[in-house]
Image (tube, rainbow, N blue to C red; front, top):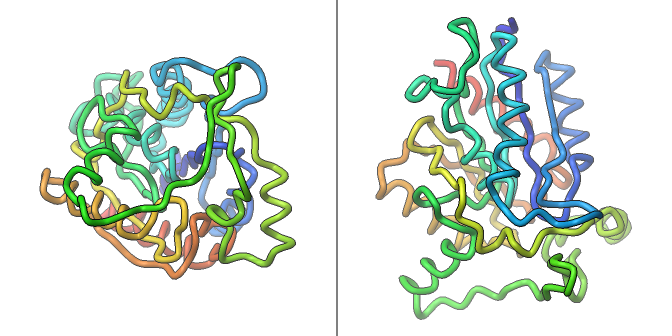
Length: 265
């Protein structure tokens, strides 16, 4: 059993766990155990059609760590915010129903790095965007260009670097674009097993002011809506694009450490 919580990193759509490597290395050097599973809404084979299987796979990772007696903090980015929030169900002090034994650890908090966050149970990513548009009719948020192909994958159009890596040197952005993989088209509207995990644990949210994938206005609106619904949420701003773990790893590590200390206080 570790005195520090295990950090479980949940990546976003089209990405792999590799982009967490620098942040993980720094945190591991500071004594944290870090786990970055592959989230199965991305892949190269047949796309998953249910959020339930995504959440269940992530809950297996949480169960393995809490079963060792370790507390856990979920560190979620972008689409990983929905998966990570949903997966805490049953592993918190408020609801410990999925804990294996009395000695099992708990999920103690959520770190959301410019992350989609479900406003309520069974809220999809598409629902969040539609909720924002309905309540802010005068605000236009440019959307990434994408299409769904016949195989059930969502395919990015144009240059993804403009949305994901706009604050990085062109050669670095090009490298990370080359590593993007497929994202299941069924995930944007998926509501099954989506759980508003912020109702059970505190949240720290990193607002990235230069984000061109989830614009600052949309991040701030999610935070405001969560506060109105009763979330215990702490925010901090970072002058970064959509991928602060790549462009601002030091600030990202500091934010995660501050959140972990707050969760343990």
